[in-house]
Amino acid sequence: MQALTVPTHEQTQYRTGRLASAWRWLALASGLTLSACAQTPAVDGAATGPKRVVVDKTVQELIAYEGERVVLRTRVSTGRMGRRTPSGNFTVGVKERMHYSRLYDNAPMPFSVQFNGNYFIHGFKYVPDRPASHGCIRVPLDGGNPAKQFYDWVEPGTPVEVTGDWVPPARAKKSKR
Image (cartoon, rainbow, N blue to C red; front, side, top):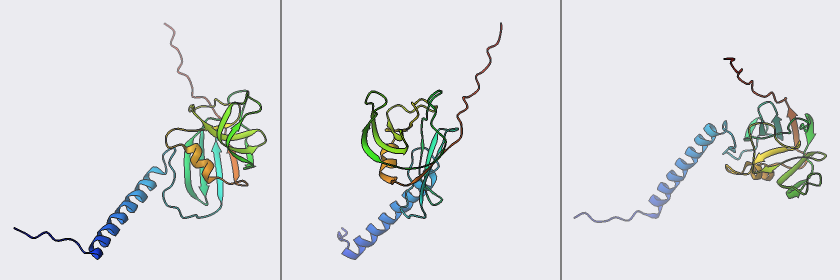
């Protein structure tokens, strides 16, 4: 019968350190793979430059950067026909964990980030892949809650660039029979 040996403190620390290193490597590798996917924050925490935000209305997407590093990429829904989200260069104003719209019947707007007067980037439960809002930029509350991630990351004064124009997908022509 073989004797049971208990690992020394040094052996345990070595194994724990190797396991932690393996998990960090796996998380980093996954982060590099997933950072191109929607609603995925970057894994490494090294700041590489100033913060900035780009919202592309053409593809209904928000990308948050630190320098050239993408820290968050998520789908959004901008302003629909007649209520377009303005294009241009803006800066983040006030942030409110819960804002209530003075223009639209006290509608709740969680994780609100003002970027231009009465226009906000905020969380919303319904974020289709097309413009649907009254002009604000809707960010999903589900799927890891990118609205909260964005709210926690962005700071007053952060530049916000809103670009592009939504072009609805072409409809298939109906055949005449």
